[in-house]
Amino acid sequence: QEGKSVYVLYVDIVCLNNDGNILDASLLALLAALRNTTLPTELKVLESGEVFQIGSSKTRKINLLNFPLPLTFGVFNDVIVADPNENECEIMDGTITTVVGENGEVLGIHKHMGPALSLDQINMCLDLCTERFNTVKEIMLSATIA
Image (spheres, rainbow, N blue to C red):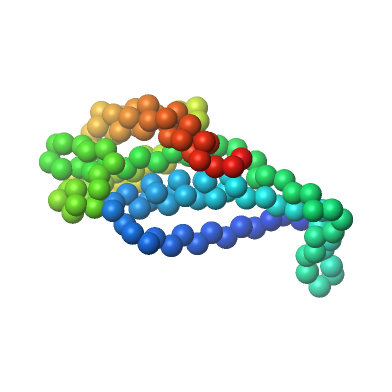
């Protein structure tokens, strides 16, 4: 819209040590970073496109509309292992990562390699991810400033 401005945030995640489930750890780190991000409320945009903060140093937190929680499972024969580490991932036939939201809604499913999973197995993974949601959210909320 004319006269409106928006923020665009770019996030780079650098992994210093991967002991498995890098996708889960990266998404949780991104959530923690966004929960602690503050943006200036009073800006001036020049015709050149440059943006300057004006007035006081008032800031506001980002309003996250959802809290996506990932949980990766390793698949080995017919056994499904929650939250496998790097050694376990090496012997797995494949992995499936589920992501659920605050109301238990499915936000994403990513299946990487391995045999096809039955609908019952996928639902079991989603149920476990949903059960884990409140515990992980409480830990995240207590560990971040917001």
